[in-house]
Image (cartoon, rainbow, N blue to C red; front, side, top):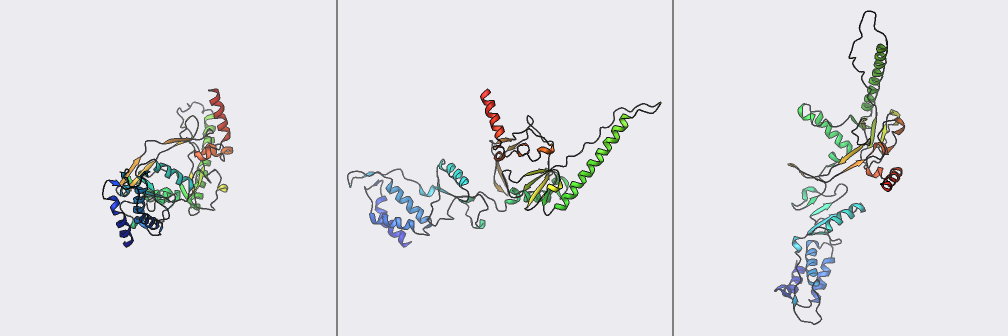
Length: 352
């Protein structure tokens, strides 16, 4: 504090009026720069930087001692600072480019001991900070324990928690096919898989009996019954496996055999929707973005812009195409590698 008073005292006369002198006190500037470079300078270093920027921003006149108009002042106190944890280069580049287009925001200076002096902290993974010590003007792009909504295995457990309550509340969470977390629920999955196989065998046997009955002529003197009830269709025993902690389609498989199920890591396995809603014969989904600013009370904003993702190969559940990710996965990071589709698209554009 004593150092701060000394520097401010040497600069005081330069900011008493609306005119600034041609040059400033060299010793004061040198002291200010030294203070900025010192570790632990904190907000004091930011303030000093603003003072020096204000002084150095004025144009130098050829004649010494001639007063010149003071340049447009920068409101150092109104500037907001953001910090991006640089563990992913592409995330850092996107966030900084967006903030460079926004007025009133600057990146938190490096090397000034200002690790926690920010208005917004943007991280790709779980922030390493104590949420209880945040000030009211500090925001983070992750809520505490948000993995219960964003990680596949945790989301499954959260949904199960409410479906087990029963009643009307449980009906709102009946939104997922049968899902199991491996390896913990492997035995439950095997039981479910075997039960579907048994039901399909019964359906097949019943269908054969019904076909034979329809083919047989009616007894003498009797009339064939109209409106025979159609045979029950077999349920596709297809399952989709996803690593619990992965994204962008990595490690996803569609299987129809228990022997293909592996769980060397934490894995989600879910009954595959074998008759999805298609557009032009292609599988697709919609990516909608929502910003949640509060959970209690709940406050969320849905973005008007989004996009649809399509596969590049027509949908089918034929066994020989179960391993074809271009048929079953809509992830853009997967579909962009389908060279055949890209070439076909180029030829169509050329013909058009």
